[in-house]
Image (cartoon, rainbow, N blue to C red; front, top):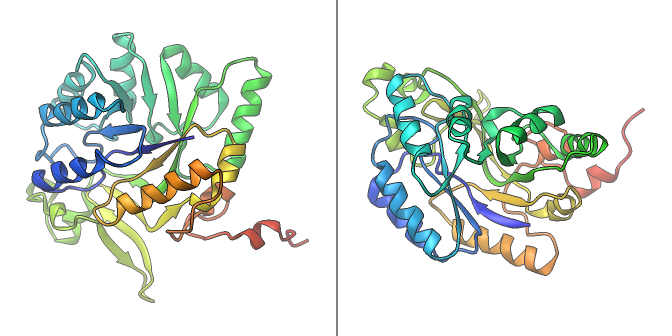
Length: 300
């Protein structure tokens, strides 16, 4: 199992982005995903900036994949997507079906991102015929769903694609044509002023009981809880997961990644560093399911 650094979810200043990835050059990750996946109005980083970073990581022997937007709404965004796909060197993570179409038209291999919503082995087999080499499991899918897809694919005699699972980070739950951050500031989306840059870790929403519930990140809604599958490394191995994704954040990410890398090298579980693993066990995503809960019998 290899570690991957997922695409950046938040809107950071260009200098912050470049500094973050300079630090990442020293982290023990095998694959790096680069690009804007949330909002096309976040223009601090241009395609040439992402490509420059991609070449630096590639020179270190890392696999580099360029990630596309998860929700496209304008012709200009399609034009940007076309330039991304036509970069001439790096594979693309398709997070929208228009990205799949662009890759298919050019007969290019691609990674199927988590927002394509692939829920069965037939969808996987279809995308494999189009050039998919790897897919990222949807965050609401767990080990049982993955086992079922793999078993059904085996019955059909088809080779199973590479699998990537979110191992650490806030879970992207939904995308909308509206901007939630702008709405919270009583601003229209077209007049947002990219106010999401003021929230480099997202805008946490609480219940009336002041319990963190969701995290608003522009047009994206995330969990407030941090998914952590470090203690689940054994079950991830049993599920034949090939890649474990770590989602970028500004604080302590190098330490978190090294804990994962050390645990993988030692063949053991990583220490718990987050507060959510429910989806992996088929439970509510915000829950933490410990070993005792997994072993206890279900109520009659």
